[in-house]
Length: 524
Image (cartoon, rainbow, N blue to C red):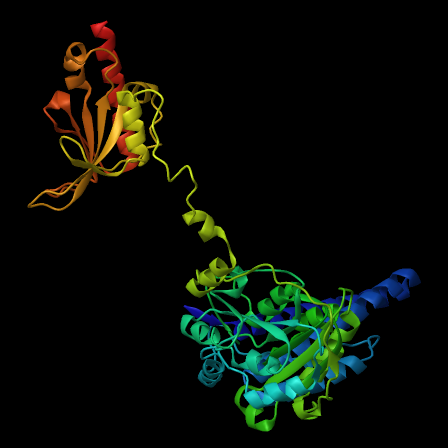
Protein backbone atom coordinates (compact mmCIF):
# COMPACT_ATOMS: atom_id res chain seq x y z
CA UNK A 1 0.00 0.00 0.00
CA UNK A 2 1.30 3.43 -0.96
CA UNK A 3 0.78 6.64 0.97
CA UNK A 4 1.41 10.21 -0.02
CA UNK A 5 3.78 12.29 2.04
CA UNK A 6 1.50 15.31 1.72
CA UNK A 7 -1.41 13.37 3.24
CA UNK A 8 0.71 12.20 6.14
CA UNK A 9 1.89 15.79 6.70
CA UNK A 10 -1.73 16.97 6.58
CA UNK A 11 -2.54 14.52 9.37
CA UNK A 12 0.47 15.67 11.43
CA UNK A 13 -0.35 19.36 10.95
CA UNK A 14 -3.99 18.78 11.90
CA UNK A 15 -2.94 17.04 15.12
CA UNK A 16 -0.40 19.78 15.85
CA UNK A 17 -2.94 22.60 15.32
CA UNK A 18 -5.56 20.97 17.57
CA UNK A 19 -2.97 20.27 20.25
CA UNK A 20 -1.64 23.86 20.14
CA UNK A 21 -5.14 25.36 20.34
CA UNK A 22 -5.94 23.25 23.41
CA UNK A 23 -2.65 24.29 24.99
CA UNK A 24 -3.31 27.99 24.33
CA UNK A 25 -6.76 27.82 25.86
CA UNK A 26 -5.41 26.14 29.02
CA UNK A 27 -2.62 28.68 29.33
CA UNK A 28 -5.09 31.56 28.97
CA UNK A 29 -7.19 30.13 31.78
CA UNK A 30 -4.02 29.68 33.85
CA UNK A 31 -3.15 33.37 33.38
CA UNK A 32 -6.59 34.41 34.54
CA UNK A 33 -6.39 32.16 37.61
CA UNK A 34 -2.92 33.46 38.59
CA UNK A 35 -4.08 37.05 38.16
CA UNK A 36 -6.98 36.45 40.55
CA UNK A 37 -4.55 34.95 43.06
CA UNK A 38 -2.22 37.91 42.54
CA UNK A 39 0.56 35.57 41.34
CA UNK A 40 1.95 37.92 38.73
CA UNK A 41 5.21 35.99 38.25
CA UNK A 42 3.44 32.80 37.14
CA UNK A 43 1.03 34.81 35.03
CA UNK A 44 3.92 36.42 33.12
CA UNK A 45 5.55 33.03 32.64
CA UNK A 46 2.35 31.58 31.20
CA UNK A 47 1.99 34.59 28.89
CA UNK A 48 5.47 33.96 27.42
CA UNK A 49 4.52 30.32 26.88
CA UNK A 50 1.31 31.52 25.24
CA UNK A 51 3.33 33.69 22.83
CA UNK A 52 5.53 30.70 21.96
CA UNK A 53 2.41 28.60 21.31
CA UNK A 54 1.09 31.26 18.94
CA UNK A 55 4.41 31.18 17.07
CA UNK A 56 4.10 27.39 16.65
CA UNK A 57 0.51 27.81 15.52
CA UNK A 58 1.54 30.38 12.91
CA UNK A 59 4.24 28.05 11.57
CA UNK A 60 1.73 25.20 11.31
CA UNK A 61 -0.71 27.41 9.40
CA UNK A 62 2.01 28.39 6.92
CA UNK A 63 2.89 24.72 6.41
CA UNK A 64 -0.79 23.91 5.93
CA UNK A 65 -1.03 26.66 3.32
CA UNK A 66 1.80 25.08 1.33
CA UNK A 67 0.24 21.63 1.65
CA UNK A 68 -3.04 22.98 0.31
CA UNK A 69 -1.10 24.47 -2.59
CA UNK A 70 0.51 21.11 -3.32
CA UNK A 71 -2.89 19.42 -3.32
CA UNK A 72 -4.18 22.24 -5.57
CA UNK A 73 -6.80 23.23 -2.96
CA UNK A 74 -6.58 26.94 -3.73
CA UNK A 75 -9.54 28.16 -1.66
CA UNK A 76 -8.18 26.41 1.45
CA UNK A 77 -4.78 27.97 0.78
CA UNK A 78 -6.33 31.45 0.62
CA UNK A 79 -8.25 30.79 3.85
CA UNK A 80 -5.05 29.60 5.57
CA UNK A 81 -3.30 32.80 4.49
CA UNK A 82 -6.06 34.94 6.01
CA UNK A 83 -6.07 32.83 9.15
CA UNK A 84 -2.31 33.35 9.49
CA UNK A 85 -2.81 37.12 9.50
CA UNK A 86 -5.63 36.83 12.03
CA UNK A 87 -3.54 34.68 14.39
CA UNK A 88 -0.64 37.14 14.18
CA UNK A 89 -2.94 40.02 15.21
CA UNK A 90 -4.99 38.14 17.81
CA UNK A 91 -5.01 39.56 21.34
CA UNK A 92 -3.77 36.72 23.51
CA UNK A 93 -5.45 38.19 26.60
CA UNK A 94 -8.91 37.90 25.07
CA UNK A 95 -11.04 36.31 27.85
CA UNK A 96 -13.04 34.00 25.61
CA UNK A 97 -11.22 31.89 22.96
CA UNK A 98 -14.41 30.35 21.54
CA UNK A 99 -14.54 32.45 18.35
CA UNK A 100 -10.76 32.19 17.91
CA UNK A 101 -10.86 28.40 18.00
CA UNK A 102 -14.03 28.32 15.91
CA UNK A 103 -12.23 30.11 13.09
CA UNK A 104 -10.06 26.99 12.62
CA UNK A 105 -12.99 24.62 12.07
CA UNK A 106 -13.47 25.32 8.30
CA UNK A 107 -9.75 24.79 7.76
CA UNK A 108 -9.50 21.59 9.79
CA UNK A 109 -12.68 20.14 8.26
CA UNK A 110 -11.22 20.50 4.75
CA UNK A 111 -7.96 18.72 5.48
CA UNK A 112 -7.93 15.51 3.37
CA UNK A 113 -8.07 12.36 5.44
CA UNK A 114 -5.08 10.01 5.18
CA UNK A 115 -7.24 6.94 4.69
CA UNK A 116 -10.36 8.20 2.88
CA UNK A 117 -9.48 11.05 0.56
CA UNK A 118 -11.33 12.88 -2.17
CA UNK A 119 -10.57 11.25 -5.53
CA UNK A 120 -9.79 14.58 -7.19
CA UNK A 121 -7.11 15.29 -4.56
CA UNK A 122 -5.50 11.89 -5.22
CA UNK A 123 -5.56 12.57 -8.96
CA UNK A 124 -3.79 15.90 -8.57
CA UNK A 125 -1.17 14.34 -6.32
CA UNK A 126 -0.57 11.55 -8.84
CA UNK A 127 0.19 14.13 -11.51
CA UNK A 128 2.61 15.96 -9.23
CA UNK A 129 4.75 12.91 -8.39
CA UNK A 130 4.57 10.92 -11.61
CA UNK A 131 8.33 10.25 -11.81
CA UNK A 132 9.95 13.02 -9.85
CA UNK A 133 12.29 13.73 -12.78
CA UNK A 134 11.89 17.25 -14.12
CA UNK A 135 15.01 18.48 -15.96
CA UNK A 136 15.60 22.23 -15.70
CA UNK A 137 14.72 24.30 -18.75
CA UNK A 138 17.91 25.41 -20.52
CA UNK A 139 16.82 29.04 -20.88
CA UNK A 140 16.28 29.24 -17.12
CA UNK A 141 19.75 27.75 -16.54
CA UNK A 142 21.17 30.58 -18.67
CA UNK A 143 19.34 33.17 -16.56
CA UNK A 144 20.88 31.59 -13.43
CA UNK A 145 24.33 31.58 -15.04
CA UNK A 146 23.99 35.30 -15.78
CA UNK A 147 23.70 35.92 -12.02
CA UNK A 148 26.99 34.14 -11.20
CA UNK A 149 30.47 35.68 -11.32
CA UNK A 150 33.03 32.97 -12.13
CA UNK A 151 36.74 33.54 -11.31
CA UNK A 152 38.66 34.50 -14.45
CA UNK A 153 41.93 32.65 -13.86
CA UNK A 154 40.94 30.02 -11.28
CA UNK A 155 39.43 26.57 -11.75
CA UNK A 156 36.18 25.89 -9.93
CA UNK A 157 34.48 22.61 -9.03
CA UNK A 158 30.78 22.36 -9.89
CA UNK A 159 28.57 19.52 -8.68
CA UNK A 160 25.06 18.26 -9.47
CA UNK A 161 23.94 15.50 -7.03
CA UNK A 162 21.17 14.36 -9.40
CA UNK A 163 22.56 15.42 -12.75
CA UNK A 164 20.21 13.56 -15.12
CA UNK A 165 21.77 13.75 -18.58
CA UNK A 166 24.24 16.42 -17.44
CA UNK A 167 22.74 19.14 -19.65
CA UNK A 168 22.00 21.72 -16.93
CA UNK A 169 25.46 21.67 -15.29
CA UNK A 170 27.14 21.63 -18.69
CA UNK A 171 25.27 24.75 -19.78
CA UNK A 172 25.84 26.45 -16.42
CA UNK A 173 29.63 26.08 -16.66
CA UNK A 174 30.18 26.28 -20.43
CA UNK A 175 32.96 28.68 -21.39
CA UNK A 176 34.26 28.76 -17.80
CA UNK A 177 37.34 27.16 -16.24
CA UNK A 178 35.69 24.34 -14.34
CA UNK A 179 35.64 20.66 -13.45
CA UNK A 180 32.11 19.28 -13.50
CA UNK A 181 30.88 16.41 -11.34
CA UNK A 182 27.55 14.62 -11.31
CA UNK A 183 25.74 11.72 -9.65
CA UNK A 184 22.89 9.97 -11.47
CA UNK A 185 20.83 7.00 -10.30
CA UNK A 186 19.52 6.08 -13.78
CA UNK A 187 22.12 4.17 -15.78
CA UNK A 188 21.05 5.40 -19.23
CA UNK A 189 20.91 9.06 -18.17
CA UNK A 190 24.24 8.59 -16.37
CA UNK A 191 25.85 7.24 -19.55
CA UNK A 192 24.68 10.31 -21.43
CA UNK A 193 25.92 12.59 -18.63
CA UNK A 194 29.41 11.09 -19.02
CA UNK A 195 29.59 12.67 -22.49
CA UNK A 196 28.99 16.15 -21.02
CA UNK A 197 30.55 16.19 -17.54
CA UNK A 198 34.12 15.49 -16.42
CA UNK A 199 33.21 12.97 -13.72
CA UNK A 200 29.98 11.00 -13.27
CA UNK A 201 29.14 8.56 -10.49
CA UNK A 202 26.30 6.08 -10.85
CA UNK A 203 23.76 5.00 -8.25
CA UNK A 204 22.18 6.71 -5.28
CA UNK A 205 23.72 10.01 -4.19
CA UNK A 206 23.13 9.03 -0.56
CA UNK A 207 25.50 6.05 -0.85
CA UNK A 208 28.20 7.84 -2.82
CA UNK A 209 31.62 8.74 -1.39
CA UNK A 210 32.60 12.33 -2.10
CA UNK A 211 35.11 14.79 -0.62
CA UNK A 212 33.67 17.40 1.72
CA UNK A 213 33.77 21.19 1.30
CA UNK A 214 35.46 21.09 -2.11
CA UNK A 215 32.78 22.43 -4.50
CA UNK A 216 32.44 26.11 -5.40
CA UNK A 217 28.96 25.59 -6.86
CA UNK A 218 26.21 23.03 -6.29
CA UNK A 219 23.32 22.92 -8.72
CA UNK A 220 20.52 21.00 -7.02
CA UNK A 221 17.26 20.14 -8.78
CA UNK A 222 16.26 17.08 -6.73
CA UNK A 223 13.50 14.63 -7.62
CA UNK A 224 10.13 15.77 -6.28
CA UNK A 225 9.10 12.48 -4.72
CA UNK A 226 6.04 12.49 -2.47
CA UNK A 227 5.20 8.80 -2.23
CA UNK A 228 6.48 6.53 0.51
CA UNK A 229 5.70 2.92 1.43
CA UNK A 230 4.55 1.61 4.74
CA UNK A 231 7.44 1.06 7.08
CA UNK A 232 9.93 2.73 4.76
CA UNK A 233 10.53 5.77 6.92
CA UNK A 234 11.34 7.79 3.83
CA UNK A 235 11.29 11.56 3.97
CA UNK A 236 10.87 13.96 1.11
CA UNK A 237 13.83 13.62 -1.18
CA UNK A 238 14.30 17.35 -1.79
CA UNK A 239 14.96 17.86 1.92
CA UNK A 240 17.36 14.92 2.19
CA UNK A 241 19.27 16.03 -0.91
CA UNK A 242 19.64 19.50 0.57
CA UNK A 243 20.89 18.22 3.94
CA UNK A 244 23.43 15.82 2.42
CA UNK A 245 24.65 18.28 -0.23
CA UNK A 246 25.62 20.88 2.37
CA UNK A 247 28.68 18.89 3.43
CA UNK A 248 30.21 19.03 -0.04
CA UNK A 249 29.84 22.79 -0.63
CA UNK A 250 32.77 24.95 0.54
CA UNK A 251 32.19 27.97 2.75
CA UNK A 252 31.52 30.94 0.48
CA UNK A 253 30.25 28.54 -2.20
CA UNK A 254 26.95 29.02 -4.02
CA UNK A 255 23.87 26.81 -3.75
CA UNK A 256 21.36 26.82 -6.61
CA UNK A 257 18.27 24.99 -5.31
CA UNK A 258 15.26 24.37 -7.56
CA UNK A 259 12.00 23.05 -6.07
CA UNK A 260 8.23 23.65 -6.34
CA UNK A 261 7.25 26.66 -4.23
CA UNK A 262 4.85 24.58 -2.13
CA UNK A 263 7.77 22.43 -0.92
CA UNK A 264 9.43 25.44 0.82
CA UNK A 265 8.09 24.36 4.20
CA UNK A 266 9.46 25.65 7.49
CA UNK A 267 11.84 22.69 7.98
CA UNK A 268 13.55 23.32 4.63
CA UNK A 269 13.60 27.07 5.23
CA UNK A 270 15.20 26.45 8.61
CA UNK A 271 18.06 24.51 6.97
CA UNK A 272 18.58 27.32 4.46
CA UNK A 273 18.49 30.10 7.05
CA UNK A 274 20.89 28.29 9.39
CA UNK A 275 23.50 27.57 6.71
CA UNK A 276 23.22 30.29 4.04
CA UNK A 277 23.32 34.05 3.69
CA UNK A 278 22.23 36.40 0.91
CA UNK A 279 19.28 34.08 0.22
CA UNK A 280 17.20 35.09 -2.78
CA UNK A 281 14.11 33.42 -4.21
CA UNK A 282 13.03 33.76 -7.83
CA UNK A 283 10.03 32.45 -9.70
CA UNK A 284 10.35 30.62 -13.00
CA UNK A 285 8.75 32.30 -16.00
CA UNK A 286 5.09 31.55 -16.56
CA UNK A 287 5.78 29.14 -19.42
CA UNK A 288 7.71 26.86 -17.04
CA UNK A 289 6.05 27.78 -13.75
CA UNK A 290 2.71 26.57 -15.04
CA UNK A 291 4.17 23.07 -15.50
CA UNK A 292 5.94 22.35 -12.20
CA UNK A 293 5.42 25.49 -10.02
CA UNK A 294 9.20 25.81 -9.70
CA UNK A 295 11.22 28.45 -7.92
CA UNK A 296 14.98 28.80 -7.58
CA UNK A 297 16.58 29.57 -4.22
CA UNK A 298 20.16 30.88 -4.25
CA UNK A 299 22.45 31.51 -1.29
CA UNK A 300 26.07 31.63 -0.11
CA UNK A 301 27.15 29.01 2.41
CA UNK A 302 28.15 30.37 5.81
CA UNK A 303 29.21 28.81 9.08
CA UNK A 304 26.10 27.39 10.72
CA UNK A 305 24.26 29.59 13.20
CA UNK A 306 20.72 30.08 14.46
CA UNK A 307 18.63 31.51 11.63
CA UNK A 308 15.23 30.82 13.21
CA UNK A 309 14.28 34.52 13.16
CA UNK A 310 14.35 34.51 9.36
CA UNK A 311 12.51 31.21 8.78
CA UNK A 312 8.97 32.56 8.90
CA UNK A 313 9.78 35.43 6.53
CA UNK A 314 11.39 33.04 4.04
CA UNK A 315 8.37 30.71 4.12
CA UNK A 316 6.03 33.66 3.54
CA UNK A 317 8.19 35.02 0.73
CA UNK A 318 8.35 31.68 -1.08
CA UNK A 319 4.63 30.99 -0.70
CA UNK A 320 3.57 34.40 -2.02
CA UNK A 321 4.25 33.42 -5.63
CA UNK A 322 2.23 36.28 -7.11
CA UNK A 323 4.73 38.75 -5.69
CA UNK A 324 7.93 36.75 -6.20
CA UNK A 325 10.50 38.33 -8.55
CA UNK A 326 11.04 36.48 -11.82
CA UNK A 327 14.32 34.71 -12.60
CA UNK A 328 14.99 37.44 -15.16
CA UNK A 329 15.23 39.91 -12.25
CA UNK A 330 18.40 38.25 -10.90
CA UNK A 331 21.18 40.83 -11.10
CA UNK A 332 24.10 40.09 -13.40
CA UNK A 333 27.02 38.45 -11.54
CA UNK A 334 25.38 39.05 -8.18
CA UNK A 335 26.85 35.88 -6.67
CA UNK A 336 30.66 35.73 -6.72
CA UNK A 337 32.25 32.27 -6.51
CA UNK A 338 35.34 31.74 -4.30
CA UNK A 339 38.73 31.90 -6.03
CA UNK A 340 40.30 29.26 -3.80
CA UNK A 341 41.15 26.16 -5.83
CA UNK A 342 40.56 22.74 -4.26
CA UNK A 343 41.14 19.16 -5.38
CA UNK A 344 38.31 16.63 -5.32
CA UNK A 345 40.31 13.70 -3.98
CA UNK A 346 37.36 11.37 -3.47
CA UNK A 347 34.47 10.98 -5.91
CA UNK A 348 32.88 7.53 -6.16
CA UNK A 349 29.32 6.62 -7.04
CA UNK A 350 27.40 3.94 -5.19
CA UNK A 351 27.37 1.63 -8.24
CA UNK A 352 30.44 0.16 -9.97
CA UNK A 353 31.27 2.30 -12.98
CA UNK A 354 33.50 0.80 -15.66
CA UNK A 355 34.24 4.20 -17.17
CA UNK A 356 35.36 5.61 -13.84
CA UNK A 357 37.52 2.53 -13.23
CA UNK A 358 39.25 3.04 -16.59
CA UNK A 359 39.88 6.66 -15.74
CA UNK A 360 41.43 5.81 -12.37
CA UNK A 361 43.56 3.01 -13.81
CA UNK A 362 44.84 5.36 -16.50
CA UNK A 363 46.08 7.68 -13.76
CA UNK A 364 47.53 4.89 -11.64
CA UNK A 365 50.79 2.95 -11.98
CA UNK A 366 49.32 -0.13 -10.35
CA UNK A 367 48.85 -1.97 -13.65
CA UNK A 368 52.49 -1.33 -14.56
CA UNK A 369 53.57 -2.84 -11.25
CA UNK A 370 51.22 -5.77 -11.78
CA UNK A 371 52.72 -6.77 -15.13
CA UNK A 372 56.29 -5.79 -14.39
CA UNK A 373 58.64 -8.79 -14.30
CA UNK A 374 61.65 -8.62 -12.04
CA UNK A 375 65.02 -10.06 -13.01
CA UNK A 376 64.41 -12.87 -10.57
CA UNK A 377 61.17 -13.84 -12.30
CA UNK A 378 62.93 -14.16 -15.63
CA UNK A 379 65.57 -16.63 -14.37
CA UNK A 380 65.25 -20.35 -13.93
CA UNK A 381 64.93 -21.24 -10.28
CA UNK A 382 66.70 -24.26 -8.83
CA UNK A 383 66.42 -25.34 -5.19
CA UNK A 384 69.63 -26.03 -3.25
CA UNK A 385 68.34 -29.48 -2.35
CA UNK A 386 65.89 -31.82 -4.11
CA UNK A 387 62.26 -31.26 -3.12
CA UNK A 388 60.54 -33.94 -1.08
CA UNK A 389 57.04 -35.17 -1.85
CA UNK A 390 55.38 -32.76 0.57
CA UNK A 391 57.18 -29.77 -0.86
CA UNK A 392 56.23 -30.76 -4.39
CA UNK A 393 52.61 -30.93 -3.26
CA UNK A 394 52.78 -27.49 -1.68
CA UNK A 395 54.37 -25.93 -4.77
CA UNK A 396 51.81 -27.59 -7.00
CA UNK A 397 48.98 -26.47 -4.76
CA UNK A 398 50.26 -22.90 -4.79
CA UNK A 399 49.89 -22.77 -8.55
CA UNK A 400 53.57 -21.98 -9.13
CA UNK A 401 54.11 -24.88 -11.51
CA UNK A 402 50.64 -24.96 -13.07
CA UNK A 403 50.51 -25.90 -16.71
CA UNK A 404 52.01 -28.49 -19.06
CA UNK A 405 54.67 -30.77 -17.50
CA UNK A 406 56.99 -32.24 -20.13
CA UNK A 407 58.46 -35.47 -18.75
CA UNK A 408 58.40 -39.21 -19.32
CA UNK A 409 54.66 -39.18 -18.86
CA UNK A 410 53.55 -35.67 -19.97
CA UNK A 411 50.62 -34.26 -18.07
CA UNK A 412 48.90 -31.04 -17.07
CA UNK A 413 49.13 -29.83 -13.49
CA UNK A 414 46.79 -27.33 -11.86
CA UNK A 415 46.61 -26.70 -8.14
CA UNK A 416 45.63 -24.35 -5.36
CA UNK A 417 45.86 -24.21 -1.60
CA UNK A 418 42.74 -24.85 0.51
CA UNK A 419 43.22 -22.57 3.48
CA UNK A 420 40.05 -23.46 5.31
CA UNK A 421 41.43 -26.76 6.59
CA UNK A 422 42.99 -26.24 10.01
CA UNK A 423 43.08 -29.81 11.36
CA UNK A 424 46.65 -30.58 12.52
CA UNK A 425 46.50 -34.24 11.48
CA UNK A 426 45.50 -33.34 7.91
CA UNK A 427 48.09 -30.56 7.65
CA UNK A 428 50.92 -32.78 9.01
CA UNK A 429 50.17 -35.96 7.06
CA UNK A 430 48.75 -34.90 3.66
CA UNK A 431 49.54 -32.94 0.60
CA UNK A 432 46.61 -31.80 -1.56
CA UNK A 433 46.44 -31.48 -5.28
CA UNK A 434 43.72 -30.25 -7.59
CA UNK A 435 42.41 -32.20 -10.55
CA UNK A 436 40.22 -30.81 -13.32
CA UNK A 437 38.31 -33.74 -14.87
CA UNK A 438 37.07 -33.73 -18.44
CA UNK A 439 35.17 -37.01 -19.07
CA UNK A 440 34.27 -37.88 -22.62
CA UNK A 441 30.55 -38.25 -22.05
CA UNK A 442 29.90 -36.23 -18.88
CA UNK A 443 30.22 -32.58 -17.85
CA UNK A 444 33.43 -31.13 -16.44
CA UNK A 445 33.98 -31.52 -12.73
CA UNK A 446 36.78 -30.82 -10.25
CA UNK A 447 38.20 -32.71 -7.29
CA UNK A 448 40.72 -32.16 -4.50
CA UNK A 449 42.89 -35.22 -3.77
CA UNK A 450 44.22 -35.73 -0.26
CA UNK A 451 47.28 -37.97 -0.58
CA UNK A 452 49.18 -39.17 2.53
CA UNK A 453 52.79 -38.08 2.77
CA UNK A 454 55.41 -40.85 2.49
CA UNK A 455 57.30 -40.27 5.68
CA UNK A 456 58.92 -43.71 5.51
CA UNK A 457 59.45 -46.18 2.71
CA UNK A 458 56.45 -46.59 0.39
CA UNK A 459 56.37 -50.38 0.87
CA UNK A 460 55.97 -49.95 4.61
CA UNK A 461 53.31 -47.28 4.34
CA UNK A 462 51.33 -48.55 1.37
CA UNK A 463 48.74 -50.38 3.46
CA UNK A 464 48.22 -47.37 5.64
CA UNK A 465 48.20 -45.12 2.60
CA UNK A 466 45.47 -47.14 0.91
CA UNK A 467 43.25 -46.56 3.91
CA UNK A 468 44.04 -42.88 4.40
CA UNK A 469 43.67 -41.63 0.82
CA UNK A 470 40.46 -39.65 0.03
CA UNK A 471 39.05 -37.29 -2.61
CA UNK A 472 36.66 -34.30 -2.31
CA UNK A 473 34.65 -34.20 -5.53
CA UNK A 474 33.14 -30.78 -6.50
CA UNK A 475 29.99 -31.29 -8.53
CA UNK A 476 29.07 -34.68 -9.95
CA UNK A 477 29.55 -35.92 -13.51
CA UNK A 478 26.34 -37.95 -13.32
CA UNK A 479 24.32 -35.30 -11.57
CA UNK A 480 23.55 -35.20 -7.84
CA UNK A 481 21.53 -33.14 -5.37
CA UNK A 482 24.72 -32.76 -3.35
CA UNK A 483 27.36 -30.15 -4.21
CA UNK A 484 30.25 -32.19 -2.81
CA UNK A 485 30.95 -35.92 -2.40
CA UNK A 486 33.87 -37.37 -0.44
CA UNK A 487 35.19 -40.66 -1.81
CA UNK A 488 37.57 -42.66 0.39
CA UNK A 489 40.06 -45.45 -0.30
CA UNK A 490 38.68 -47.39 2.66
CA UNK A 491 35.28 -47.35 0.94
CA UNK A 492 36.66 -48.54 -2.43
CA UNK A 493 36.57 -44.93 -3.68
CA UNK A 494 32.80 -44.75 -3.40
CA UNK A 495 31.11 -41.75 -1.89
CA UNK A 496 31.30 -42.05 1.90
CA UNK A 497 30.06 -38.51 2.65
CA UNK A 498 27.61 -36.32 0.71
CA UNK A 499 27.75 -32.61 1.54
CA UNK A 500 25.66 -29.62 0.50
CA UNK A 501 28.18 -26.90 1.35
CA UNK A 502 31.80 -26.28 2.42
CA UNK A 503 30.88 -26.32 6.11
CA UNK A 504 29.64 -29.90 5.81
CA UNK A 505 32.80 -30.81 3.85
CA UNK A 506 35.04 -29.49 6.63
CA UNK A 507 32.98 -31.36 9.24
CA UNK A 508 33.37 -34.60 7.27
CA UNK A 509 37.16 -34.10 6.95
CA UNK A 510 37.33 -33.53 10.70
CA UNK A 511 35.52 -36.84 11.19
CA UNK A 512 37.91 -38.61 8.81
CA UNK A 513 40.93 -37.11 10.57
CA UNK A 514 39.84 -38.60 13.89
CA UNK A 515 39.29 -42.03 12.31
CA UNK A 516 42.67 -41.93 10.56
CA UNK A 517 44.45 -40.74 13.69
CA UNK A 518 43.10 -43.82 15.53
CA UNK A 519 44.16 -46.04 12.63
CA UNK A 520 47.77 -44.85 12.82
CA UNK A 521 47.90 -45.09 16.61
CA UNK A 522 46.65 -48.70 16.47
CA UNK A 523 49.37 -49.55 13.96
CA UNK A 524 51.98 -48.17 16.33
